[in-house]
Length: 349
Image (cartoon, rainbow, N blue to C red; front, side):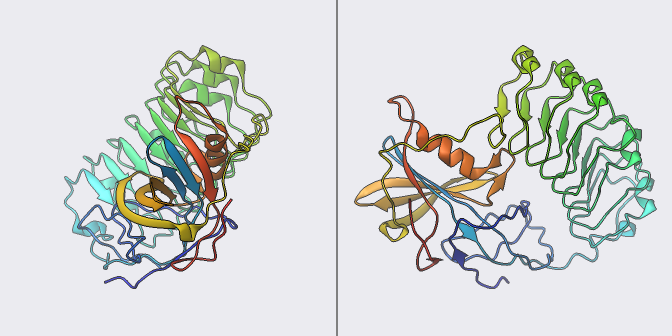
C-alpha cells in the first residue's frame, strides 16, 4: 500500500510535522514507523524531518541527528468525514485530515459527544460544540486565536491547539475545568493574566513559541505537575516556579536564560558508516531506540522523529546529555549529524 521511503541524514532545516498512531508510514526497512490502528486513512503526501539520538549500552551512550524524508499514505476517509454517517449517540468523533475549512454546524447535534478530534484540517474558527465535550484536539489547523466556542464548554478537561498559528488565546476566558492545555509550536508572544484562573491545570505545554515573559498568575496553578517552556525567548525564570510543590517536570532549554551546555573534551568523532543498526528496542512519542554495534561494542541508538519535540529542540537535549560526565549518569560519547548509504551524506562529531 505504501511506496518505499528513504532516510536522509543531515542537521540543517527545521520541520515539525506530526504523526498520530493511525498513520500508515511508508518507510524503508530500517525506518519503519509505528502503525497503531486498523483505521487507515488517506493523507496528503508530505515531507518529514527526523532527528536522531544514539545511546550506547553498558553505561555508554551515543547521540545522532537524522533527517527523514518521505510520504505518508493510507486509505480513503470519505465516509469517516460525513457527520451523517454517525449515530446521534456517538461519544467520539475522529475528523482528522478531512479537508475541512469550516467544521459543519451539525457537530453540535451530538449531545453525548465526549471527544472530538478535528486535527490537521484548515480550520480558522469553530461553530458551537456539544456541551458534553471533555477532550478537544485541534492541532495542525489555521487558528490565530482560540475560538470563543471553546469558552462555552463546561466539562472540557483536555485541549490541544498544537502546531496551529496562534498569536493569542482569544478574548474569551478558557473553561476553568481544564486540566491539560497543549499550545506547543505556535506564535505566542504573551499570555493573559486570566490563564491563572485555571487552577485545576496539571499539564501546561508552551514549548516552541515566542514567549518573552510569563504571567505571575500561573503561580496560582497549585495542581500543576508539568510545565514545558523550552525554545521560547524567556530572559529569566520567575521565582514562583520554586513555590509550586507538585511541579515534577520542567523543560526550559533553548531560552536565553539557559546557556547551551558545553560538550566534553572527551567526545569522540563517530561516523555513521561505523554503526550497524539492529532491532528496535522501544519507541516513544518523539523517538525510536534501536540496538546497534559500534567498533565491536553494543550500543543503543535513539532516533528522533523531528528536530522539535514537546520539550523543545532535540539538539539542546543532545548538548546537555553530552556535557554530563558522572559515574552515576549514563555517559554519552557524541552525536551524528549525517549518514551514508541509506542515511545518505553523513559526517559525525
